[in-house]
Image: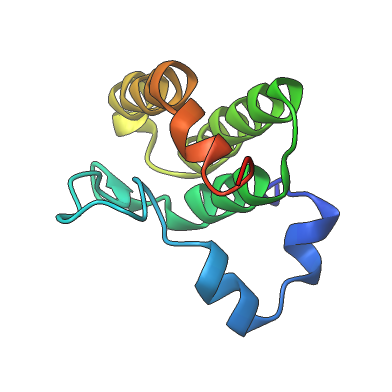
Length: 114
């Protein structure tokens, strides 16, 4: 199963994608504290889709939908991976979701109310 994304994400040029998307964690962080992997599995594409959702979103509903899409995409990736690590990876995916859900508003609204 392919990852779910918005039409805006599908239309991004590589140059636009490089400007908008930065993998997991905030773009403004001095040090990259949020890994792009969960127990060795690359999740950067799911995070890039989430970055795009935040970039183009304009309402709290858009934020919540982007956060849910992140969780769904993480679960899609996890279900494709090792059966033995699924439980651990799902727990970590829920932590990523909880983090963006609880602490992502400043990143979502960044640059929109200027």
